[in-house]
Length: 435
Ligand code: AMX
Image 1: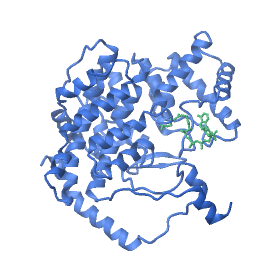
Image 2: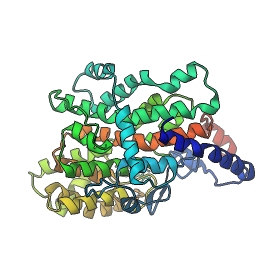
Image 3: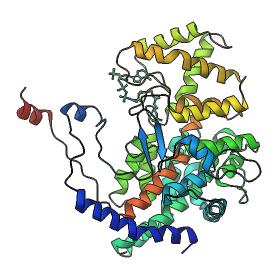
Image 4: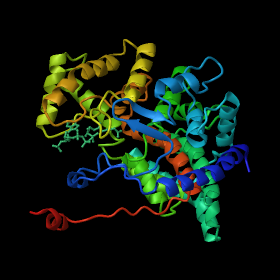
């Protein structure tokens, strides 16, 4: 058993007992009520899931195991040679172990993932069999499904593993998946946008640094961006479409590959992760229509009104839970102010931030007029030359493996059952409450 697994294993027994005792003492407490309207409104505001790794507060934004993003930027280890941004290995450790890691623990994770990172050749063949024009998220999901041949959980289940040990092969699958995704993602990027000129991994680099390297970006600042990007996109509590899909599918004892692919299909929706590509597409089409340069506030406002009048959403704004500017947006804005304050796209993104909230508020129906994570991420990537925006959601997807896989290991360790909420019909509700 590797040292990381041993460390996790030492926590399992106590956590199982803790949860069991808690349910026996408080299992009958009532934590909320369900209104008829919530059944028609995407179950907003219903506490219905356990997700140990992070919690989203509408006003304050995300906290990972209790820590805000600025706190994590302070506390999580960064690169020893003067790095400022948190290493994603650190947030994974925090989410899995509920402890802030030290430098050694983060280095151990980097090495562990580097050792696990070899992708079998048939995965590349499966990706190569798709037309290059297939959306990168389609290729990503195909790659993840092809990786499934490696599932240790599926093998162990077939051989009759005892349920108390489910978390063990799940841990192996989760770690292998996280280790291999950057290679799969970089392969898709180089295949589609760089004539298939692939770049071999550099096992001496950290997980995000190596990902940047395989994408073809060896600039230190871009590597720092990737570390921040992977950290802040890693988790957003349990109810968002991608995290919930992974959890739901995983609850049927589908292995990590099946479950993560399900989550990625959800992330590829334009109201969720695909919004990061949509933001750049929207900004570029606004700029084209206005003849280039930095649009004035009035021009942006007119373009927003036209978007709304055409029955479309303004991508990158609004949120199902948040009611303030997303701290993930703030973290990226700070990165831009530190590294590229005069970048034209940054100035456009900033001006959009000054204009859009008032316009969305004026509709009288948008519950959160403030920007979310996706309003900023594309601009940072564009600045360093990663301009192929159809690829952006794949980056988001690689990052999401950290939170969803940490959760999946815990779900198996706690023996959570298959998900099966009830549904009803409008006719039955009418019978109950009147027409
Ligand atoms: N532009 C235009 N209209 C918007 C809007 C936006 N950015 N955000 C919300 N609205 C509209 C809704 O479409 C809805 O209209 P309807 O009543 O005519 O159907 C109304 O406002 C009320 O919606 P809401 O309760 O405020 O939002 P929600 O919880 O239903 O949806 C979200 C949340 C994110 C899907 C929505 O704000 C949206 O579509 N935003 C743009 C897409 C986006 O940025 N998605 C990324 C979110 C973050 C992420 O998951 N990565």
